[in-house]
Length: 150
Image 1 (cartoon, rainbow, N blue to C red):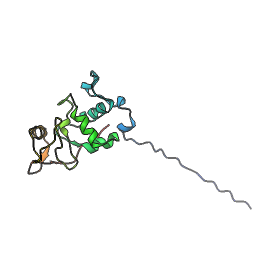
Image 2: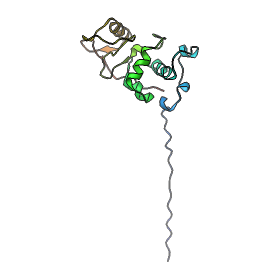
Image 3: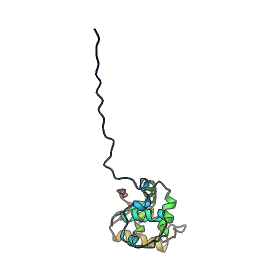
Image 4: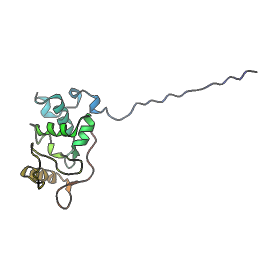
């Protein structure tokens, strides 16, 4: 007597409800903030960095590394693009800090050896005005970096 076995295979969708990462999107397909709608300024990569930076809400911050990971790039390249941001403060490059919470650079400048500079004092003041918290020394931002980029 022959036995017949029937196997049923169920296919499940692997489609994710997560938005397409920016790296999978050509920079020209990223949502453009208002300043970029009417300006041809910046390379495609710079415009992609500026578009992501525009998504960081007031009172929040993100890191060079998180933006870089989203774009499959390097934190240094992100920092260089932000250094050339002609749309500040509308595209808020002051909301991007170093991974450890240090302020990093601002307006194309980096901290002096003592970790301070007039531009970093300005960056700190802008972040504080928006409600970002700092450690007791005022040297590092506190909280979880924004990573909800589309």
